[in-house]
Image 1 (tube, rainbow, N blue to C red):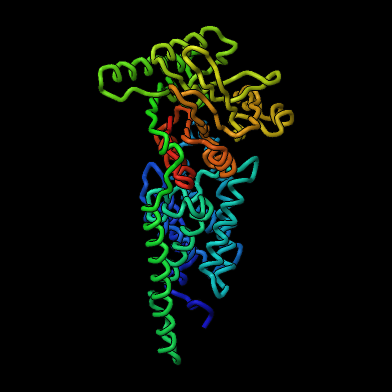
Image 2 (cartoon, helix red, strand yellow):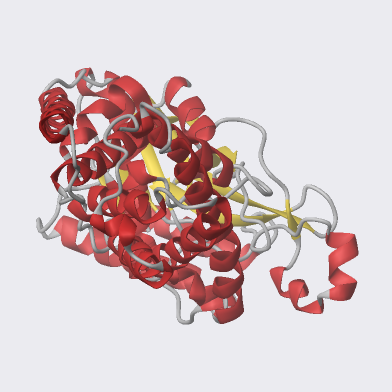
Length: 459
């Protein structure tokens, strides 16, 4: 008998079409495990079903089934990218699914090994590492740890980080697959029946025990929280304003300055509620990414609108701004700490940019061939320093960490912000549809959990 119950089980006796259907179902299940659906138990079932769908196949067939799995998962998980254009969503999903095709090949190979559940989890981690970095910085929004924020495994975040939690999620999924294999009926064996039954019982017991151990340890760790630095210095009330935009997609910002006017109006509403005692008075206010669509340092009207908002509130505002420069036909997505009396006191420039959304790889070569890329506008330039702003809040100095939208998926950027002394972590996105807002919500607690940092989101 091959190691760890390698005999064929009924799901593995399905034809190619049956396996494709299992893989598609697994992909849809995993897609529903992320926000805004948050059906996290489907995460583990989806991983297990995908393993069963490709186990025992040759590389070419496993590649195709893995691709079908990726398409199904991403159509659900990242369908929000259609706001950038239908063909943008099609191209992104088609390309990213290639990574899951490779995952299908990897799992079909490693499931022949003795300790295949562990090897399959390692394959998940390798592919996750790849699609989070390749190409042009990668697209890590579907890391499986982000679906585990509300699971018992969330307690592991401070100990092993996002990558470690992804690994444990993959391990649990493989243990579920192992348990299914041990329970599934198999063809009669002319000899050694009792030995096979004993091996199946051992496999079921081992997989169940390991799964329960991981879950119980993770759940226990959720009750053990290291007190954050800010917790010893008192609380801060953060007023979060979302002014919204009039349109969608590349025309989302509408007419010039309308998005900034909207945020001024919502800031006035917030302060009216505060002064009526309907909500707590904020120590500072958080505006989302791109809450000014024109550089306030170069446009007097935009600057006056933001300054009016700070004067109405009487507290600083962390403003998301589109800034011109540093060179010609260049721009930066920035966070500006705007004080009511002294103006801009600190600035952070976004470091991880969206390819073909904020910057164009091989711009000189692609623009003549694809003139539609001109709609991206000026080439964005990444910042160079971590987003830790040392700023005055009331009578004290506070280190505010800022993570802007796409940066939530980059471990190094988030870690450098947290280890740079940030006492409060701000997660800001632009004004996207509900699915994007929910996804950024699920991503931000992951790094915040790692150091038990207080976090706020503007989206």
